[in-house]
Length: 235
Length: 235
DNA sequence: GCGGTCCATCTTGTATTCAAGACTGAATAC
DNA sequence: GTATTCAGTCTTGAATACAAGATGGACCGC
Image 1 (cartoon, rainbow over the protein chains, first blue to last red):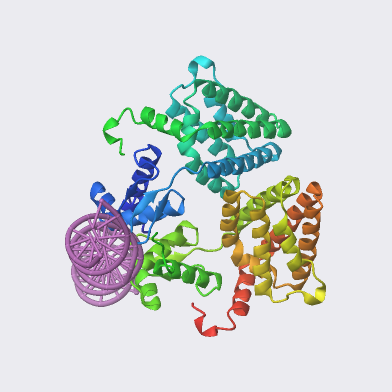
Image 2 (cartoon, chains in turn red, blue, brown, cyan):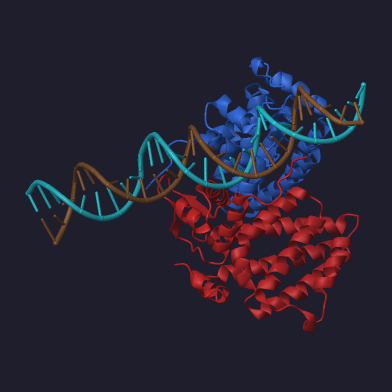
C-alpha cells in the first residue's frame, strides 16, 4: 500500500510559517509575498501556496487578490469566543468521563504528571504550557468522542499564541498544578458536578487572564520568547 | 482594496466535487486521479489539487502517494459523534439565547417560516432539509459566538449527506415543523430548561434515524436523488 | 508645489513541465 | 501452470512558465 514516507514540503512549510507566527517573528500586520517565502525557504511557490492557503482557512492569514499576503491581527473577541467554546467542550468531556462506566486509565496516567509535590514541578513557562495543552487534550480524548477531540485540538492550536503568556506569571503555574490535581481526583471519584464546576472555573480563569492581555503585553512577550534567537526578530 | 471578484477556479471545483459526493455521483470507494477530474472539468490540475486537498482535510477524500485518490466510505460512528457534538453546541446556544437579555429578532423571523398551518408547509424533502439546516444555523448564530457558529457550520456540512435522508419520510417532516415551532415559542418565552430539553431530544431523534440508515438505504436514496439526472450515475 | 495619468513592475491564480517512484502486465525461469 | 522479474506507463508532488490585473512611482499639465 502506498504511503507518504515523510511529510510533504507543503506540510513542512505550513509548520514553519505557523511557528514564525507563534514565535512573533511574523507579527500581525506583516505583509509578504509567496515568492519571498519561497526564496527564504528554498522551495518553489507551489508548496508555499498550499501552506498559506491552509493557514488562511484557519484564520491566521489573509490574501489580497494579486496583491500579497498579510498576517491577521489578534482578534481578542475571537479568542474570547474560542475560550468559551473550549469551556463548553471540556465541561461536556469531564461530565461524560465521570458518568461513563468505563476505564479511566488515561486519567490515572495524568495523575503521575500533575499530582506531585511543589519541589518536583516544572517551572519553565514554555514547558508548562506544553504540558497544560497535553493535559486538556488527553482529558477530552479520554471522553471518547473523536470529533469533539478534533475540534478541541483545533481550538488549542488557535489559542496557543496567548495561552503561553498565561504561564509567564509564576502564580498561574502553581494554580494550574493545584487545579489539575484536584480535577483528576474529582473525576476518579466520579464527582460529576464538582468536576464540571472546577473545569469550568479553571478555564474561565485562563480566559480572564487572556482578557487582560493587551497588544503591549504581546510585544513584551515577544521580547522574552525570542531572546534565545534574537537575530530573527523580524520587523 | 483588492478583492477577489468571482470565486476562484479552485473554489468552484471544490464545490462541484463536494456536490458530486453529496449527490452520490461519486460513491464511497470510487477511485480517481487528478488528471481525470481536471479533464472532466476542463481545467488544469492545479485548482483541482487545491480542491481535493481541502476535501481531504475535511475528511471526505483520501490520497495515496503516487497512486490516486478515493472517496472515503461513510463512517457511521463518526456521524454519530458529529451528531453528539452538534447537540452539545445547539443546547448551549439555546440556553444562551434564553438567558441573554438581548434581542431575539432572528428568532422572531424564524417563526414566520416554521409556525404555519399544515397546508402551507413545504413537503419537498430536498427543500425541507435545506430549511432545516438554515433553522439550526440561524439559531446558533443568534447566540452570538461566531466560533461556535463556525464549528456548527462545519458539522452541518459533514452530516448533510445523511441528514437529507431523514426527510424522505414524510412523518419526519411533520415532526420537524411541530418541534421547530414549539422550540421557537419556548425560546421567546425564555423557558430555558424546557427549550434545552426539547432541542436535545429533537436532534437526538435525528441521530436515531441516522443510526437506522444502512448502506442499503444509502444506495436506495442514491436512486431517488439522482433520478433527475440518471446519465451521471458514476460507478 | 500639487494632482492626475500612464507605464513598468510586481503579485497572485492557473497551466505546464519535470522528477521520483508506485503499479501493471507481459515475458521468463522453473 | 505458477511465481518472479523487469520495463513501461501512470500518478502525485514540486518546479517552472504564463496570464491577468493590481500597485506604485515617474512624468506631465497647471
